[in-house]
Image 1 (cartoon, rainbow, N blue to C red):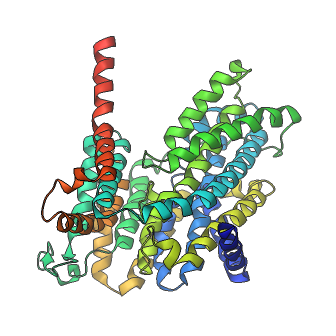
Image 2 (tube, one colour):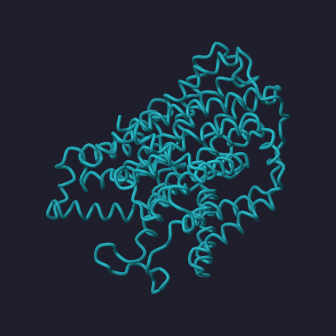
Length: 497
Protein backbone atom coordinates (compact mmCIF):
# COMPACT_ATOMS: atom_id res chain seq x y z
CA UNK A 1 0.00 0.00 0.00
CA UNK A 2 2.93 2.33 0.67
CA UNK A 3 3.78 2.41 -3.05
CA UNK A 4 0.24 3.46 -3.97
CA UNK A 5 0.21 6.17 -1.28
CA UNK A 6 3.48 7.55 -2.63
CA UNK A 7 2.15 7.36 -6.20
CA UNK A 8 -0.97 9.28 -5.17
CA UNK A 9 1.31 11.89 -3.59
CA UNK A 10 3.21 12.01 -6.89
CA UNK A 11 -0.04 12.60 -8.79
CA UNK A 12 -0.91 15.42 -6.37
CA UNK A 13 2.43 17.09 -7.20
CA UNK A 14 2.38 16.36 -10.95
CA UNK A 15 -1.23 17.53 -11.33
CA UNK A 16 -0.59 21.09 -10.09
CA UNK A 17 -1.28 23.62 -12.88
CA UNK A 18 2.37 24.62 -13.33
CA UNK A 19 3.61 21.00 -13.51
CA UNK A 20 0.79 20.04 -15.90
CA UNK A 21 1.87 22.95 -18.10
CA UNK A 22 5.50 21.76 -18.05
CA UNK A 23 4.36 18.21 -18.88
CA UNK A 24 2.28 19.46 -21.81
CA UNK A 25 5.09 21.66 -23.15
CA UNK A 26 7.53 18.75 -22.81
CA UNK A 27 5.19 16.36 -24.65
CA UNK A 28 4.52 18.89 -27.42
CA UNK A 29 8.21 19.80 -27.86
CA UNK A 30 9.18 16.11 -27.74
CA UNK A 31 6.61 15.16 -30.39
CA UNK A 32 7.74 18.01 -32.64
CA UNK A 33 11.40 16.99 -32.23
CA UNK A 34 10.55 13.35 -32.90
CA UNK A 35 8.77 14.34 -36.12
CA UNK A 36 11.69 16.42 -37.43
CA UNK A 37 14.20 14.12 -39.17
CA UNK A 38 17.70 13.98 -37.74
CA UNK A 39 16.77 15.38 -34.34
CA UNK A 40 15.99 13.32 -31.27
CA UNK A 41 15.42 13.55 -27.51
CA UNK A 42 19.15 13.45 -26.73
CA UNK A 43 19.82 16.54 -28.88
CA UNK A 44 16.80 18.37 -27.46
CA UNK A 45 17.37 17.60 -23.78
CA UNK A 46 21.06 18.46 -24.20
CA UNK A 47 20.16 21.77 -25.84
CA UNK A 48 17.65 22.63 -23.09
CA UNK A 49 19.79 21.51 -20.12
CA UNK A 50 20.75 25.12 -19.24
CA UNK A 51 17.14 25.71 -18.06
CA UNK A 52 18.08 23.68 -14.97
CA UNK A 53 19.68 26.87 -13.62
CA UNK A 54 16.30 28.66 -13.78
CA UNK A 55 13.57 26.06 -13.19
CA UNK A 56 12.60 24.14 -10.05
CA UNK A 57 13.85 20.49 -10.08
CA UNK A 58 10.49 18.68 -10.16
CA UNK A 59 9.13 20.86 -12.97
CA UNK A 60 12.26 20.49 -15.12
CA UNK A 61 12.41 16.68 -14.70
CA UNK A 62 8.71 16.42 -15.67
CA UNK A 63 9.51 18.65 -18.67
CA UNK A 64 12.48 16.48 -19.75
CA UNK A 65 10.50 13.26 -19.22
CA UNK A 66 7.79 14.69 -21.52
CA UNK A 67 10.40 15.42 -24.20
CA UNK A 68 11.86 11.93 -23.81
CA UNK A 69 8.46 10.28 -24.22
CA UNK A 70 7.15 12.65 -26.88
CA UNK A 71 10.09 12.04 -29.20
CA UNK A 72 9.36 8.32 -29.14
CA UNK A 73 5.78 8.98 -30.29
CA UNK A 74 6.77 11.55 -32.93
CA UNK A 75 9.66 9.52 -34.36
CA UNK A 76 7.27 7.03 -35.95
CA UNK A 77 5.63 9.79 -38.07
CA UNK A 78 8.77 10.40 -40.15
CA UNK A 79 9.44 6.66 -40.34
CA UNK A 80 5.99 6.02 -41.83
CA UNK A 81 5.61 9.06 -44.07
CA UNK A 82 9.23 9.71 -45.12
CA UNK A 83 11.05 6.42 -44.50
CA UNK A 84 13.40 8.55 -42.35
CA UNK A 85 13.49 7.38 -38.71
CA UNK A 86 13.52 10.28 -36.25
CA UNK A 87 15.19 7.98 -33.70
CA UNK A 88 17.20 4.76 -33.98
CA UNK A 89 14.42 2.94 -32.11
CA UNK A 90 11.97 3.67 -34.93
CA UNK A 91 14.16 2.25 -37.72
CA UNK A 92 12.17 -0.99 -37.74
CA UNK A 93 8.87 0.90 -37.92
CA UNK A 94 9.98 2.27 -41.29
CA UNK A 95 10.26 -1.24 -42.76
CA UNK A 96 6.51 -1.89 -42.84
CA UNK A 97 5.09 1.54 -41.98
CA UNK A 98 6.51 3.20 -45.09
CA UNK A 99 5.16 0.39 -47.31
CA UNK A 100 1.70 0.76 -45.70
CA UNK A 101 1.83 4.51 -46.41
CA UNK A 102 2.87 3.88 -50.01
CA UNK A 103 -0.24 1.70 -50.41
CA UNK A 104 -2.62 4.33 -49.02
CA UNK A 105 -2.73 3.03 -45.42
CA UNK A 106 -0.67 5.75 -43.70
CA UNK A 107 -3.55 6.53 -41.32
CA UNK A 108 -3.77 2.94 -40.05
CA UNK A 109 0.02 2.78 -39.59
CA UNK A 110 0.06 6.06 -37.63
CA UNK A 111 -2.93 4.94 -35.52
CA UNK A 112 -1.47 1.56 -34.51
CA UNK A 113 1.83 3.31 -33.79
CA UNK A 114 0.27 5.94 -31.48
CA UNK A 115 -2.10 3.55 -29.68
CA UNK A 116 0.63 0.90 -29.36
CA UNK A 117 2.95 3.49 -27.85
CA UNK A 118 0.23 4.44 -25.36
CA UNK A 119 -0.50 0.82 -24.37
CA UNK A 120 3.18 -0.11 -24.04
CA UNK A 121 4.09 3.12 -22.24
CA UNK A 122 1.27 2.71 -19.72
CA UNK A 123 2.02 -0.95 -18.96
CA UNK A 124 5.75 -0.21 -18.68
CA UNK A 125 5.07 2.74 -16.34
CA UNK A 126 3.00 0.43 -14.09
CA UNK A 127 5.97 -1.98 -14.03
CA UNK A 128 8.36 0.90 -13.18
CA UNK A 129 5.99 1.88 -10.33
CA UNK A 130 6.00 -1.66 -8.95
CA UNK A 131 9.63 -2.67 -9.47
CA UNK A 132 11.70 0.53 -9.05
CA UNK A 133 11.17 0.78 -5.25
CA UNK A 134 11.99 -2.95 -4.88
CA UNK A 135 15.23 -2.56 -6.87
CA UNK A 136 16.10 0.54 -4.80
CA UNK A 137 15.62 -1.39 -1.55
CA UNK A 138 17.93 -4.14 -2.81
CA UNK A 139 20.49 -1.62 -4.14
CA UNK A 140 20.81 0.02 -0.69
CA UNK A 141 22.48 -3.21 0.49
CA UNK A 142 25.22 -3.03 -2.16
CA UNK A 143 28.67 -1.80 -1.12
CA UNK A 144 31.46 0.02 -3.01
CA UNK A 145 32.88 -3.20 -4.63
CA UNK A 146 29.46 -4.07 -6.08
CA UNK A 147 28.86 -0.51 -7.29
CA UNK A 148 32.25 -0.33 -8.98
CA UNK A 149 31.62 -3.65 -10.77
CA UNK A 150 28.13 -2.48 -11.75
CA UNK A 151 29.55 0.70 -13.28
CA UNK A 152 32.28 -1.32 -14.99
CA UNK A 153 29.54 -3.51 -16.48
CA UNK A 154 27.67 -0.40 -17.65
CA UNK A 155 30.85 0.96 -19.28
CA UNK A 156 31.52 -2.32 -21.05
CA UNK A 157 28.02 -3.07 -22.30
CA UNK A 158 27.26 0.46 -23.51
CA UNK A 159 30.64 0.65 -25.28
CA UNK A 160 30.65 -2.88 -26.69
CA UNK A 161 27.03 -2.99 -27.90
CA UNK A 162 26.51 0.54 -29.24
CA UNK A 163 28.12 1.46 -32.56
CA UNK A 164 29.67 -0.64 -35.28
CA UNK A 165 32.69 -1.99 -33.38
CA UNK A 166 33.82 -2.63 -29.82
CA UNK A 167 37.10 -0.77 -30.46
CA UNK A 168 35.25 2.40 -31.50
CA UNK A 169 32.91 2.09 -28.51
CA UNK A 170 35.79 1.67 -26.08
CA UNK A 171 37.66 4.61 -27.66
CA UNK A 172 34.60 6.82 -27.16
CA UNK A 173 34.34 5.60 -23.55
CA UNK A 174 37.97 6.49 -22.81
CA UNK A 175 37.43 9.98 -24.26
CA UNK A 176 34.55 10.41 -21.79
CA UNK A 177 36.59 9.01 -18.87
CA UNK A 178 39.47 11.37 -19.72
CA UNK A 179 37.18 14.40 -19.81
CA UNK A 180 35.67 13.34 -16.47
CA UNK A 181 39.11 13.31 -14.80
CA UNK A 182 39.86 16.96 -15.64
CA UNK A 183 39.79 19.29 -12.62
CA UNK A 184 40.21 18.72 -8.88
CA UNK A 185 40.46 15.19 -7.50
CA UNK A 186 37.32 14.58 -5.40
CA UNK A 187 39.24 12.95 -2.53
CA UNK A 188 42.75 14.48 -2.44
CA UNK A 189 42.01 17.91 -3.94
CA UNK A 190 44.91 17.43 -6.39
CA UNK A 191 44.66 19.38 -9.66
CA UNK A 192 44.59 16.98 -12.63
CA UNK A 193 44.93 17.40 -16.41
CA UNK A 194 44.08 21.10 -16.56
CA UNK A 195 47.13 21.99 -18.74
CA UNK A 196 47.41 25.21 -16.74
CA UNK A 197 44.01 26.47 -17.95
CA UNK A 198 42.22 28.01 -14.93
CA UNK A 199 38.76 27.42 -16.46
CA UNK A 200 39.39 23.66 -16.18
CA UNK A 201 39.92 23.78 -12.39
CA UNK A 202 36.24 22.99 -11.70
CA UNK A 203 36.13 20.38 -14.46
CA UNK A 204 34.19 20.48 -17.72
CA UNK A 205 30.42 20.77 -17.43
CA UNK A 206 28.44 17.76 -18.64
CA UNK A 207 25.87 20.19 -20.07
CA UNK A 208 28.53 21.80 -22.24
CA UNK A 209 29.80 18.45 -23.55
CA UNK A 210 26.26 17.17 -24.18
CA UNK A 211 25.26 20.32 -26.08
CA UNK A 212 28.52 20.27 -28.07
CA UNK A 213 28.38 16.58 -29.00
CA UNK A 214 24.68 16.30 -29.75
CA UNK A 215 23.16 19.68 -30.63
CA UNK A 216 26.19 21.36 -32.27
CA UNK A 217 27.78 18.15 -33.62
CA UNK A 218 24.51 16.86 -35.10
CA UNK A 219 23.70 20.23 -36.68
CA UNK A 220 27.14 20.64 -38.27
CA UNK A 221 27.12 17.04 -39.49
CA UNK A 222 23.69 17.49 -41.12
CA UNK A 223 24.80 20.74 -42.76
CA UNK A 224 28.02 19.18 -44.08
CA UNK A 225 26.85 15.74 -45.18
CA UNK A 226 23.05 15.57 -45.36
CA UNK A 227 21.91 19.09 -46.15
CA UNK A 228 21.21 18.45 -49.83
CA UNK A 229 19.23 15.22 -49.45
CA UNK A 230 15.67 15.41 -50.77
CA UNK A 231 12.91 13.25 -49.31
CA UNK A 232 9.49 12.44 -50.72
CA UNK A 233 6.51 12.76 -48.36
CA UNK A 234 3.76 10.14 -48.60
CA UNK A 235 0.16 11.33 -48.73
CA UNK A 236 -1.72 11.46 -45.40
CA UNK A 237 -5.20 10.02 -44.94
CA UNK A 238 -7.61 9.75 -42.00
CA UNK A 239 -5.98 8.28 -38.88
CA UNK A 240 -8.10 5.26 -37.99
CA UNK A 241 -8.05 1.46 -37.92
CA UNK A 242 -10.62 -1.05 -39.09
CA UNK A 243 -11.92 -3.81 -36.80
CA UNK A 244 -9.60 -6.31 -38.52
CA UNK A 245 -6.59 -4.03 -37.97
CA UNK A 246 -7.48 -3.68 -34.28
CA UNK A 247 -7.71 -7.48 -34.02
CA UNK A 248 -4.26 -7.88 -35.58
CA UNK A 249 -2.64 -5.05 -33.60
CA UNK A 250 -3.45 -5.71 -29.94
CA UNK A 251 -1.56 -9.03 -29.57
CA UNK A 252 1.47 -7.38 -31.24
CA UNK A 253 1.29 -4.47 -28.76
CA UNK A 254 1.35 -6.86 -25.80
CA UNK A 255 4.16 -9.00 -27.21
CA UNK A 256 6.21 -5.90 -28.04
CA UNK A 257 5.73 -4.54 -24.52
CA UNK A 258 6.86 -7.85 -22.99
CA UNK A 259 9.98 -7.89 -25.20
CA UNK A 260 10.93 -4.24 -24.71
CA UNK A 261 10.76 -3.83 -20.94
CA UNK A 262 13.54 -6.29 -19.93
CA UNK A 263 15.92 -4.81 -22.51
CA UNK A 264 15.33 -1.28 -21.24
CA UNK A 265 16.32 -2.23 -17.69
CA UNK A 266 19.81 -3.45 -18.68
CA UNK A 267 22.60 -1.58 -20.51
CA UNK A 268 22.20 -3.58 -23.72
CA UNK A 269 22.23 -1.01 -26.47
CA UNK A 270 18.92 0.84 -26.13
CA UNK A 271 15.68 -0.03 -27.89
CA UNK A 272 17.15 -1.27 -31.20
CA UNK A 273 17.50 -4.93 -30.15
CA UNK A 274 13.93 -5.44 -28.81
CA UNK A 275 12.40 -3.67 -31.83
CA UNK A 276 14.22 -6.01 -34.23
CA UNK A 277 13.26 -9.01 -32.07
CA UNK A 278 9.64 -7.86 -32.05
CA UNK A 279 9.64 -7.46 -35.84
CA UNK A 280 11.09 -10.95 -36.30
CA UNK A 281 8.51 -12.39 -33.87
CA UNK A 282 5.56 -10.73 -35.61
CA UNK A 283 6.78 -11.84 -39.01
CA UNK A 284 7.03 -15.44 -37.78
CA UNK A 285 3.64 -15.47 -36.04
CA UNK A 286 1.67 -13.50 -38.64
CA UNK A 287 -1.17 -15.15 -40.58
CA UNK A 288 -0.45 -12.66 -43.39
CA UNK A 289 3.27 -13.23 -44.12
CA UNK A 290 2.79 -12.18 -47.75
CA UNK A 291 2.20 -8.56 -46.58
CA UNK A 292 5.67 -8.25 -45.01
CA UNK A 293 8.03 -6.43 -47.37
CA UNK A 294 5.32 -5.92 -50.01
CA UNK A 295 2.14 -3.98 -49.12
CA UNK A 296 3.14 -3.55 -45.43
CA UNK A 297 1.91 -5.60 -42.47
CA UNK A 298 0.30 -3.71 -39.58
CA UNK A 299 1.82 -6.14 -37.03
CA UNK A 300 5.27 -5.07 -38.27
CA UNK A 301 4.45 -1.53 -37.10
CA UNK A 302 2.47 -2.33 -33.93
CA UNK A 303 4.98 -4.73 -32.30
CA UNK A 304 8.22 -2.74 -32.79
CA UNK A 305 6.59 0.55 -31.74
CA UNK A 306 5.33 -1.06 -28.51
CA UNK A 307 8.75 -2.63 -27.88
CA UNK A 308 10.43 0.75 -28.45
CA UNK A 309 8.24 2.65 -25.98
CA UNK A 310 8.35 -0.13 -23.40
CA UNK A 311 12.18 -0.18 -23.52
CA UNK A 312 12.37 3.63 -23.31
CA UNK A 313 10.21 3.66 -20.16
CA UNK A 314 12.16 0.80 -18.59
CA UNK A 315 15.42 2.80 -18.74
CA UNK A 316 14.08 4.78 -15.76
CA UNK A 317 14.49 1.73 -13.49
CA UNK A 318 18.33 1.58 -13.54
CA UNK A 319 18.56 5.37 -13.88
CA UNK A 320 16.56 6.16 -10.74
CA UNK A 321 17.49 3.15 -8.59
CA UNK A 322 21.18 2.64 -9.44
CA UNK A 323 22.18 5.96 -11.00
CA UNK A 324 23.22 4.07 -14.16
CA UNK A 325 21.95 5.32 -17.56
CA UNK A 326 21.28 2.68 -20.24
CA UNK A 327 20.68 5.13 -23.11
CA UNK A 328 22.05 8.45 -24.33
CA UNK A 329 19.02 10.46 -23.22
CA UNK A 330 19.02 8.73 -19.82
CA UNK A 331 22.66 9.81 -19.39
CA UNK A 332 21.71 13.43 -20.11
CA UNK A 333 18.74 13.18 -17.70
CA UNK A 334 21.23 11.97 -15.07
CA UNK A 335 23.36 15.07 -15.66
CA UNK A 336 20.22 17.23 -15.25
CA UNK A 337 19.67 15.68 -11.81
CA UNK A 338 23.32 16.30 -10.94
CA UNK A 339 22.92 19.97 -11.89
CA UNK A 340 20.52 20.23 -8.94
CA UNK A 341 22.95 18.41 -6.63
CA UNK A 342 20.67 15.33 -6.68
CA UNK A 343 22.50 12.00 -6.91
CA UNK A 344 20.47 9.27 -8.60
CA UNK A 345 20.80 5.90 -6.90
CA UNK A 346 19.24 3.75 -4.18
CA UNK A 347 19.00 6.66 -1.73
CA UNK A 348 17.02 8.77 -4.21
CA UNK A 349 13.70 7.22 -3.17
CA UNK A 350 14.39 8.40 0.39
CA UNK A 351 16.18 11.73 -0.17
CA UNK A 352 14.08 13.01 -3.11
CA UNK A 353 10.94 10.92 -2.81
CA UNK A 354 8.56 13.72 -3.88
CA UNK A 355 10.52 14.38 -7.09
CA UNK A 356 10.78 10.70 -8.07
CA UNK A 357 7.09 9.91 -7.56
CA UNK A 358 6.00 13.15 -9.27
CA UNK A 359 8.15 12.17 -12.26
CA UNK A 360 6.67 8.65 -12.37
CA UNK A 361 3.13 10.06 -12.04
CA UNK A 362 3.87 12.51 -14.86
CA UNK A 363 4.55 9.53 -17.15
CA UNK A 364 0.93 8.36 -16.75
CA UNK A 365 -0.30 11.89 -17.44
CA UNK A 366 2.12 12.36 -20.35
CA UNK A 367 0.95 9.13 -21.99
CA UNK A 368 -2.63 10.41 -22.12
CA UNK A 369 -1.50 13.83 -23.38
CA UNK A 370 0.59 12.21 -26.12
CA UNK A 371 -2.27 10.00 -27.28
CA UNK A 372 -4.43 13.12 -27.69
CA UNK A 373 -1.60 15.03 -29.39
CA UNK A 374 -0.76 12.23 -31.82
CA UNK A 375 -4.14 10.95 -32.99
CA UNK A 376 -6.33 14.02 -33.74
CA UNK A 377 -3.42 16.44 -34.34
CA UNK A 378 -1.15 14.30 -36.51
CA UNK A 379 -1.85 16.54 -39.51
CA UNK A 380 -0.36 19.49 -37.60
CA UNK A 381 2.86 17.57 -36.89
CA UNK A 382 3.18 16.55 -40.53
CA UNK A 383 3.28 20.26 -41.47
CA UNK A 384 6.55 20.52 -39.48
CA UNK A 385 8.18 18.32 -42.13
CA UNK A 386 7.87 21.25 -44.56
CA UNK A 387 10.18 23.51 -42.49
CA UNK A 388 13.39 24.15 -44.50
CA UNK A 389 16.39 22.53 -42.81
CA UNK A 390 18.72 25.53 -43.11
CA UNK A 391 16.78 27.92 -40.79
CA UNK A 392 15.83 25.01 -38.52
CA UNK A 393 19.42 23.99 -37.81
CA UNK A 394 20.62 27.61 -37.67
CA UNK A 395 18.01 28.17 -34.94
CA UNK A 396 19.26 25.15 -33.01
CA UNK A 397 22.85 26.49 -33.13
CA UNK A 398 21.71 29.90 -31.88
CA UNK A 399 19.65 28.33 -29.08
CA UNK A 400 22.54 26.07 -28.02
CA UNK A 401 24.99 28.99 -28.00
CA UNK A 402 22.71 31.22 -25.92
CA UNK A 403 22.04 28.38 -23.47
CA UNK A 404 25.71 27.53 -22.89
CA UNK A 405 26.76 31.19 -22.62
CA UNK A 406 23.96 31.81 -20.12
CA UNK A 407 25.38 29.25 -17.66
CA UNK A 408 28.57 31.16 -16.73
CA UNK A 409 28.68 34.08 -19.21
CA UNK A 410 32.02 32.70 -20.39
CA UNK A 411 33.34 33.08 -23.95
CA UNK A 412 35.76 30.22 -23.17
CA UNK A 413 32.74 27.89 -22.78
CA UNK A 414 31.58 28.81 -26.30
CA UNK A 415 34.96 28.00 -27.86
CA UNK A 416 35.02 24.72 -25.94
CA UNK A 417 31.46 23.90 -27.06
CA UNK A 418 32.40 24.47 -30.72
CA UNK A 419 35.54 22.35 -30.31
CA UNK A 420 33.50 19.51 -28.82
CA UNK A 421 30.96 20.00 -31.63
CA UNK A 422 33.72 19.42 -34.21
CA UNK A 423 34.73 16.30 -32.27
CA UNK A 424 31.08 15.19 -32.51
CA UNK A 425 31.16 15.67 -36.30
CA UNK A 426 34.31 13.53 -36.60
CA UNK A 427 32.82 10.82 -34.36
CA UNK A 428 29.61 10.73 -36.40
CA UNK A 429 31.55 10.77 -39.69
CA UNK A 430 33.69 7.78 -38.71
CA UNK A 431 30.93 5.87 -36.87
CA UNK A 432 32.15 6.36 -33.29
CA UNK A 433 29.17 6.18 -30.88
CA UNK A 434 28.70 9.29 -28.75
CA UNK A 435 26.75 7.67 -25.88
CA UNK A 436 29.87 6.16 -24.21
CA UNK A 437 31.44 9.64 -24.02
CA UNK A 438 28.60 10.97 -21.85
CA UNK A 439 28.31 7.74 -19.82
CA UNK A 440 32.08 7.72 -19.19
CA UNK A 441 32.14 11.40 -18.25
CA UNK A 442 29.27 11.12 -15.76
CA UNK A 443 30.00 7.72 -14.23
CA UNK A 444 33.82 7.89 -14.44
CA UNK A 445 34.40 10.05 -11.33
CA UNK A 446 31.74 8.05 -9.42
CA UNK A 447 33.38 4.75 -10.41
CA UNK A 448 36.78 6.09 -9.32
CA UNK A 449 35.41 7.05 -5.90
CA UNK A 450 33.72 3.63 -5.47
CA UNK A 451 36.95 1.85 -6.49
CA UNK A 452 38.96 3.78 -3.89
CA UNK A 453 36.36 3.07 -1.21
CA UNK A 454 36.36 -0.64 -2.13
CA UNK A 455 40.17 -0.82 -1.89
CA UNK A 456 39.99 0.88 1.50
CA UNK A 457 37.53 -1.79 2.66
CA UNK A 458 39.86 -4.50 1.32
CA UNK A 459 42.93 -2.81 2.88
CA UNK A 460 44.49 -2.32 -0.52
CA UNK A 461 43.72 -5.83 -1.82
CA UNK A 462 42.22 -6.06 -5.32
CA UNK A 463 40.87 -9.47 -4.38
CA UNK A 464 38.05 -7.68 -2.53
CA UNK A 465 36.18 -7.58 -5.87
CA UNK A 466 36.06 -11.39 -6.17
CA UNK A 467 35.67 -12.19 -2.46
CA UNK A 468 32.18 -10.70 -2.33
CA UNK A 469 29.58 -12.86 -4.18
CA UNK A 470 27.62 -10.03 -5.84
CA UNK A 471 30.70 -8.27 -7.26
CA UNK A 472 32.17 -11.62 -8.41
CA UNK A 473 28.93 -12.40 -10.32
CA UNK A 474 28.98 -8.95 -11.95
CA UNK A 475 32.61 -9.47 -13.04
CA UNK A 476 31.65 -12.85 -14.51
CA UNK A 477 28.79 -11.20 -16.47
CA UNK A 478 31.22 -8.51 -17.65
CA UNK A 479 33.64 -11.17 -18.97
CA UNK A 480 30.73 -12.94 -20.67
CA UNK A 481 29.71 -9.72 -22.44
CA UNK A 482 33.23 -9.32 -23.80
CA UNK A 483 34.04 -12.97 -24.59
CA UNK A 484 30.79 -14.71 -25.64
CA UNK A 485 30.06 -12.58 -28.77
CA UNK A 486 33.62 -13.15 -30.03
CA UNK A 487 33.50 -16.91 -29.40
CA UNK A 488 30.10 -17.05 -31.14
CA UNK A 489 31.45 -15.08 -34.12
CA UNK A 490 34.48 -17.39 -34.37
CA UNK A 491 32.25 -20.48 -34.31
CA UNK A 492 30.09 -19.03 -37.10
CA UNK A 493 33.18 -18.28 -39.19
CA UNK A 494 34.48 -21.81 -38.67
CA UNK A 495 31.07 -23.33 -39.47
CA UNK A 496 30.26 -21.23 -42.55
CA UNK A 497 33.67 -20.14 -43.72
